[in-house]
Image 1 (cartoon, rainbow, N blue to C red):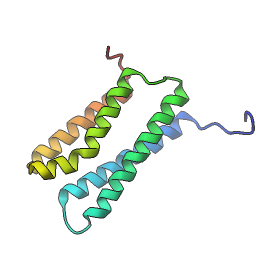
Image 2: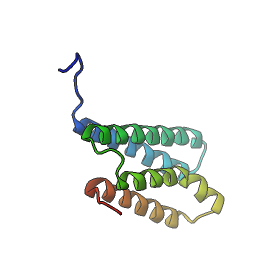
Image 3: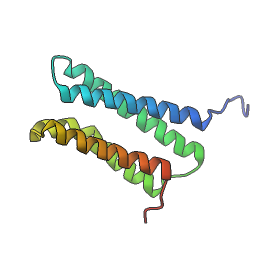
Image 4: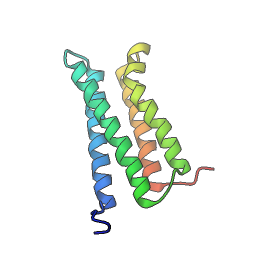
Length: 120
């Protein structure tokens, strides 16, 4: 304990981040499925996005990484993923294409988070 505070382990940030990713996936999936609970799934998506953002930046701060290139790209992709359900609905995207695009973006974000490459 330093200055009366306890320090959170970086693993806690990662676990919270994964919970946010799960909430986002459930929210986006529910919104893409449609139905009468669409608003509930939209709220879940928003909560997941917020949890991901706060825990991701918290982990960057905890690790003393600043705001590296991979985090800039992940933040841009985070914005895109947040807009996907609306874009898919407006563009009347087939479900199979929407799933493929979503999984591809999530895969890229996962790779960036695990590998933390220097992009430029």
